[in-house]
Image (tube, rainbow, N blue to C red; front, side, top):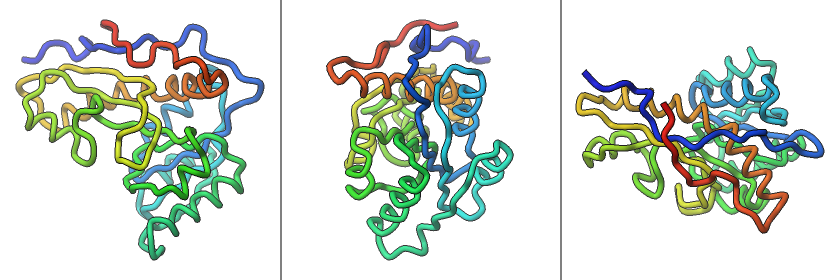
Length: 228
């Protein structure tokens, strides 16, 4: 039997959480179920993350995030990538939607499309993504399967700024989880996702704090301590 999955390496959350002159205005982009959206919304409701979600953009008509966002009371916009002639055209529609909703931070929460300079240039250093590995290891798709195939003993998740090269931007925060011999992709993914939900809201706050103080790095960014 595997040891307790609570034996993780994870950075401490901010104490206190950063505060801002006004709430951060977030635009969330998602392609799947939207569990990270819900984690961010919970952090906002609990008063930890000083932010408000202006809009949720999704690209798959059947994505569960639409239902989850509606239950949480957030506006949703479907931008089906299949209806656009290029990635740039899709990103222009995304930028137009984000700007119409007065978004200042773009939060990719399971967005399964590569972005272009159209989006990155519209929100310089203010596009964040979460990836299910300890970057720079295992970028791209099927990161959990890559980790298991490589036989690593530790995996995890990374919140990073988005740049043109996939999963290459500066790291904001990471959390690590052990990989046990009997792990399947589904079991390891679930363990990683617990940590995604924990660190993503905090990473948003730390990234915004760092952006307001360009000479400083996000506190705790990249530092791993024993938790559990």
